[in-house]
Image 1 (cartoon, one colour):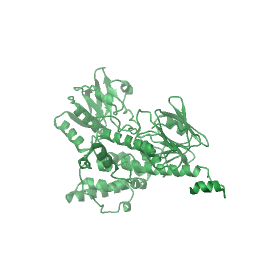
Image 2: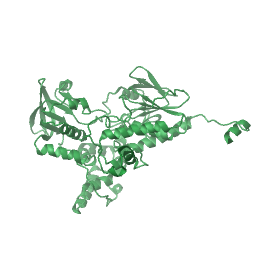
Image 3: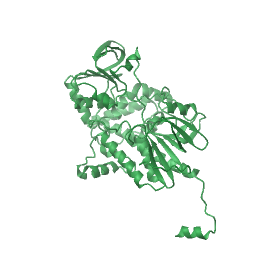
Amino acid sequence: MSTSNTDPRCPAVAIIGAGFSGTMVAVNLLREATGPLRVILIERADAAGLGVAYREQPDCHLLNVRAEGMSAFPDQPSHFLKWLAEHRGDEALVNPAAFLPRRLYGVYLRSILAEAAATSRRDVRLELVHDEVLGVAASEREIRLRMAKGNSITAQRVVLAMGNPGPADPPADDPSFYSSPLYQSHAWSTHGLISVRHDDAVLLIGSGLTTLDWLAALHERGHRGPIHVVSRRGLLPRAHAVAPRHVLSFDLFAVPPTVRQLMRVIRNEIDTVIAEGGDWRSVMDALRPHGQRLWQRLSRPEQLRFLRHARTYWDIHRHRAAPRIVETVNRLTQRGQLEVLAARPISYADNGDAVEVQLRTRGGKQTITRTVQRVVNCTGPDSNYRRLNHPLLQSLREQGLATVDTLGLGLETDAAGGLVERDGGASARVFTLGPTRKGELWETTAVPEIRGQAQTLARHLLSVIAAAQPSRREPANDPVLAALHVG
C-alpha cells in the first residue's frame, strides 16, 4: 500500500494515527477523491487499522457492540455483516447479534483500507509511514511534520487521529512504586498479561470495560490467584441484552438543561418501562442518538456537575459489555476469586516479590490492606489534556495551532473538527476527530459516532482541497483541445 508519489504539486493530507479514526478518514479520502491526492497515514505501531483496540489480542476480548452495529460506513449499515459472510463462509452462519472478537474487527479494517487503496484513482495514492510525529512547523502554504526517526513529512492538511491517551498513574502518597516491575502502567499490554503467573494475586485499579477485558483474559488463561478490583464507586459495567425499541414519552429538549432535571426524567422513564415489563436498556438506547445535542445544551457548570456526580452511573449503563464477559465476571465472583471494592490506593510497600497496597474505602471511613504480586492500571484514558505532555500536542499548543477545551477533556474544535487556534479562529489546515473532541461532543468514542465523523471530515477535506487548487481553464477556441474534449 506504500507509494512513491511525492510530486510536490499533488496536495497531501497527513493523518496522524491509524486506529479506527485515522484509518476511516483515509478510507473515505481514497474512495471519494476525484483529483490528485496523497493520503499519508502515519502510525508508530507496525500495522494500520488496529490502534490499541483491535491489535492482536485474546479472542475473549470482544467488541462491545453487536456485529450488526459495527459497519465502518454510516450509509452502508450491513457492510460488516456482508464482509463477515464473504470471509467466514455461509451468510446464514453470520449472527448479527453476536459480540465478535476485536481482533477480527482489526482484520476487517485492514481489509477495507487495502481495498480502498487498490480501487482508488490512479492519481490518488496511499502512503503508510511507520513513525511517530513529535512536532510541527507551519508555514503559510504547508505544514511540516517532524518525525521521531529524524526525517520530516510535508502536507497541506493534517488530521489528528490519535485516539484515546493512555492512563495516568493514580495519585499516591509515594509514587515511586510506579517504576516497580510489579506495576503495569498500561493495561493494554499482551506481554504484561502473559507475565502474570497463574497463582499471583492481582490488583486491578479501575472497574470499567478495560478491567472486564483483563478479568476475561485471566479467566481464559486459567488464572487461580485472587483478583481485587478497586475503583472510586466499585461499580462494573452492565451487560448488553436484547431490548425492544422504545420511543421516549417526553420531549428531551423541553426538559430544563440541568443534570438534576435530566436524570430525574430519565429515571422516571426507566421506572415506567420496567413497571410495564420492559428493560432499562430500551430507554438508554433511545437516548443514544441525542447524546451530543444533550451535552451541548448543558452549561459548563452543568457539564462539570455531570462529570463529578453522574458520569460513573451513566458510563456503566451506556457503555455496556458483551454478556459472555459479564457471565465470566459473575463466575469469578461466585467462587470467591474476585473482590470488587469501592476504594482507592493510597500507598504501596514493595518488597520485590510482592507489594502491600493500602486502600482507603469510599468516604474515607477505613483503611484496608491487600498483598498482591501485580498491580495493573485499568483506569482508562487520561482525559485531562491540560497535563498531557505528548510532544506533538505541546508543539501544536506552543505555536498557537491548538487550544484545550474549557473542560480539559480534549481540544477545542469547530463543527468540522478544525482545531481552534490561540487567536480564536478555526483552522482550515489541522483537524481532529474521535476522543479528542470529547469536551465538545461527549459522545465521540464509539464506532457509530466516529464513522460518521470520518466520512464527514473526509468530504470536508476534499472540498477544501478542491477549492484551494488553481483553476485550469481551457483557452477559448482551441480546436485541438476541443477535439480532445469531445473525443
